[in-house]
Image (cartoon, rainbow over all chains, first blue to last red):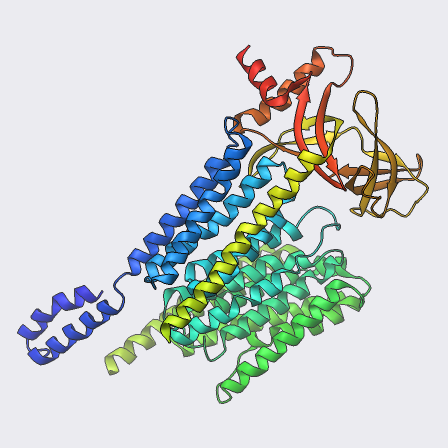
Length: 428
Length: 193
């Protein structure tokens, strides 16, 4: 992009669009910028190389070579670990650059995994895969801070998620909940906040904006053991929390593709609500509201956190109009309580909620001249109507008419907005 | 000032590196002690072949020794149970007693997990912990096939057993034997036939 702009400069000067001085200062500005980030690609390739070599060694050793004696295998178990440690030690002592630190840290990360895997093989240690991953993650956690390494933070979250799934999801209600997920996730947050404070425009920050909420969505189900009726409530509150984080002052002005919280929170909420808009689901939900269960405490804790984040985010921008997406989880929690005794009312409530969300998205799209948001709203309403075809007895004529109306709606709204936008641009 | 900070960070790193080395080393030393000083028992077993994404192929061993009579009826699933062992003249293990707490270190006992309590038979069923034997990638599945074939060959009874060293409640699985030949060599022999 920059080089393209610089190439255009002479032409702009020739046609008297900008002066020679301006051209020079633009050129100077971009040259200064490239000096500041000289080795972004180096870092990426360094990390990728180290990760691939690490995984490669891990897989080669997983062959379990019979020809090696126990002592040779034992020595082999330590070789990658020690090499990784020497590289990291060297990088720290000689204050090497980002590339060195990221690459050596990544290699050491896999070195730790390799050594434990090999020892397990040699002595036929039965320990399950979950505990193996947990030890691995814990042993490499401090490296994130010592090396200030982005790639290690990412690996930490990914492997922590793997551990939680392996440990918490399984057949039957006997498997335990991966409680270690929370302290280990909290442990990486100071690094994340620091990164945000230093330079929120970094790509790594955007990646973490996606990976962190995604990880929590993947893992949360592992805390539901017996009271599966709580599942929709737990997830709606979690998604509400994620959405509200996405509207906080730090993230609010991020572009949508960098704000994973907002996209995941909104999309997840709508999908879950659409599922819950079916009457039959509520009928099956009729259950006793059990207060003294793990699931209830998870709901209560999540709810308190979500409300606090919402209040904080509202305080940050009081003047702005807030939208229903922020409060959906509260509305759903009330409907959930109502649904225990009267599933019919809850069903109708959820349908109204989804419809309102669709209308709000359409309004937001037209106000902000955002085609994506506008069509997102239209899509919500369309999907809601399609869903209703399954559990209501509408005649084919009415169904057909509804589709025609929606189709025309799609065309009209987009067309009107296109025209509005065009007019504005001409006015400018 | 900056140098002091570097040395400080490096010091923390050295401590971390030592911990990273200590964890696998401690895993090794504990097992070596059991292998060197423990008593060897034979456990009759049956191999099946799954795999682990990072640690490779292994065979899971289903032991014949998997239940014990007990008066205690309140066993819950996945509860830890300690199994005190007896040895017959051929070296095969059998259950002497089960308990919720550890036996004296002078006794040979192993840890297991309760599967369920069978109230008809008044027996508690359990899984022994050392049920994983890592094998070379190409051999793990063959090991299962070879075992099945050995059954077809009309051997009078199951002649596959695991050699397990036991000391102070710790157990290390050392080898798996089919027809008096270590399973690694047995698979190779069968493959070359």
